[in-house]
Image 1 (cartoon, rainbow, N blue to C red):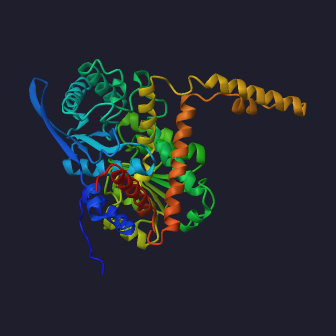
Image 2 (image 1 turned 90 degrees about the horizontal axis):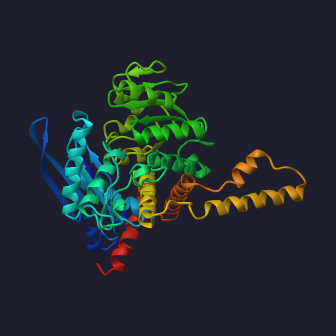
Image 3 (image 1 turned 90 degrees about the vertical axis):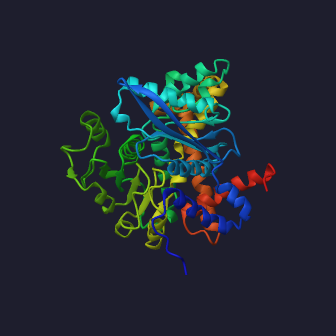
Length: 473
């Protein structure tokens, strides 16, 4: 009889989901413990003068695994962050990188702060001081530990961190690679901002390429026309909704935000809603949808796909029995608790796990890191060569057929790929090939009966092999 576990915190929830894969693999207990353990955690407290008064801020940087270097993971600015959360997110990063074949260890950072309470100059001074603490203690460098944006941070903060590192270590010619998610003009790569949301799109496209997977989720056909509920309309949620709506024809029937939710059976325009939120600060008063004050209840709305794209633990043991979505695509980290995962699995609701679904960000971060180390933008050497070859192909086609090629052929074939084309191509390949590996494990390993276990099975096998190869046993 299975012991009922209640109220697991985020870290224990992640560990219990991993334990199932470890049992199926039959991994040695010592190796399993080494893989699950967080290598080290840095806690820093530092003062910054704000409006004439000294405030002390607390931050963390956890390294879950350094079996590959550098260790990689975002930095979030949130008043709700704590060490337990940071350790759990660092562990997820280790598994995430392994699942999508990105050669990094897992790390994560957080600063306990409400960014809305400080102006731009104050945030700049706070961020730079935090970066100094990380760098001087060995938790920030292109070779050892590379942060990226997360909740509450973005391109601006990453640029400040990179500049701080540059001034601390001016002899490091690879200083730009100390952090990813930077503005393009400061060493960033095109496509990074929307990478996590686009990765969600590419993952769902790949899922819908397999009719047996779609049938298992109680649906049929393509993405077009599917009803989607998005929880969280920040960078990830907005970009996923916008791309799926504009390019795949899905219908966004509800958007759930911290200050309320909107629903409209005929569909919500993501671009229009995002502009409204940017202007007003929330969804209240949006004219083209019905407003709901009890936002959390809309997680239970009847839909085809639910995309939780905000924070962890929004689908719990309490509301899992009421979830009506056929497919849950976890764009956030840990949005479904361990207990809820079991309830949903028993009900036949298919879950595409966070460790795979939101890996688009780290995949494109990897591309940016490689770009910074190479000191050359993607496509610079081959783009014009590809254009010339494309024109030759079109010309040959015209001579053979005696007809002029239509404009779309010239556009598609005779165009050399730019950096964004190459980044998106690499991201698409990453999400497609990773899903195929996960699907293969789910289909071929008898004891694996869900995508989350299959994903962790892949991650644990890869990390264990790496540990054994370097002599940790």
